[in-house]
Each structure stands twice: as C-alpha cells, then as structure tokens.
Length: 157
Image (cartoon, rainbow, N blue to C red; front, side, top):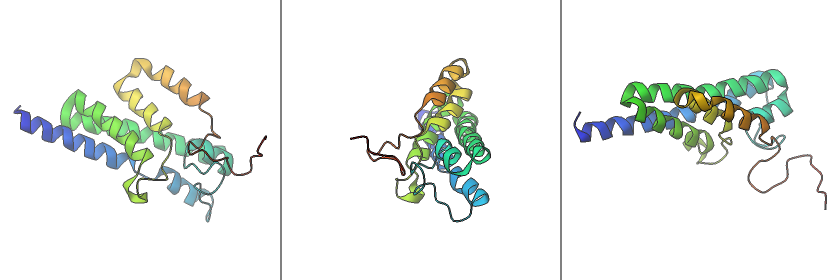
C-alpha cells in the first residue's frame, strides 16, 4: 500500500474512533432511567458509570459501564477493519479521547475514560485486560478530576 493511502486509512480510523468515543452513553441511559437528571450536575458531576451508579442505581450504572466499554471495543474493531492493527490502536486511543473531550460539548464535560480504555484494552491488548479491569474497579468514583469536591461531600478541614 502506498504511504499516502496508509496515512489516509489511519486518519480515517482515528476520526471514526474519536466520533465513536463521543457517543453520549451516560446521557442516553440517564434519559431512560430518570427524566430531568443531569449527571454533570448531580453526584460527582462526572457522566460516567460510577456516578450513574451513585445517582441512578445499579442498573443504570451497569448500562453506562457496558456502553462505555463497548465504545472503546467497537472503535478498535472499526479501526482494525479500516487500517489494520495500527488502526485499531489509534482508533481505540481516539475513542478514549472522544469520551473525555467530546466535540459536542465544547471538548468539556466528558467522562474519565476508564471504561472506554477497558474496551480498548479488551480488543487490542486482551492479555492485559484483567489488569485494566482491576484498575477500573479500584478507580475512585468520587474523584471528578477538576479539583472540586463532589456534590454532597463535607470538607474535612
């Protein structure tokens, strides 16, 4: 394959991976589970599985987690079809970036990328999947990564 054609395929894999990563899993689950709730202003303020679990309950939390893992996995699979193994890695990385910084919300208000990275790892590094899943399991669900306290927490100082 000509180098220019290969770069085009890799670029397409990255673009598709990013767009798949921006799929608003938490927003869609929240609309079905509890009309009027916005995970970005409830609980930790993070639109991820841990906050959905805390605010909406175990079914919604599991649905968000499965959807976010699927985003990473599907992006890698699409990337592999478009541009081979390197395309799979790039599309998976792009999906995590899209999950964290979605264009639709001005590159703000995304998740932490933990579940999307688990999906990426499942497809591109299956031998390391148990390690990534363990990291996801111990990730602090109250850490919103922006330096503010979660809603409802007490300042211990």
